[in-house]
Length: 126
Image (cartoon, rainbow, N blue to C red; front, side, top):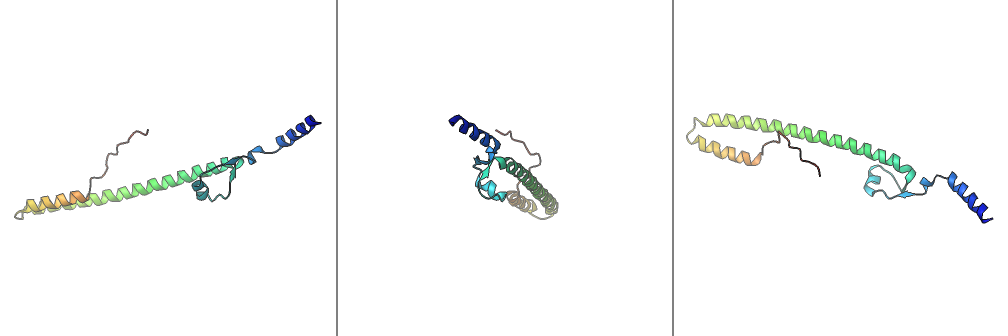
């Protein structure tokens, strides 16, 4: 009798989706980002993980584009400041003590505007 009940229980359990019973302890930040409420089961984890990977890829691409656009604007501004300094250096040659004034001006600007990272060196990831 016990064996028959056990066999019947095993058949019922075999017909159920056991992945629905196993809970996944996902980080709360992931669940909030994807607007997932409540605990998730192992059956839902694959779809949520795929959504998470897509979200990360989209936002990484957006962030890279934003950084590149800001870097391009910085290079443009740096180029114009350099042209202005070259023009000021040429004009300072005709002014008494112009070399000293130009040296002080370029030193002050050099402190405020560091050189752009033209040849970005890739550091190995550990």
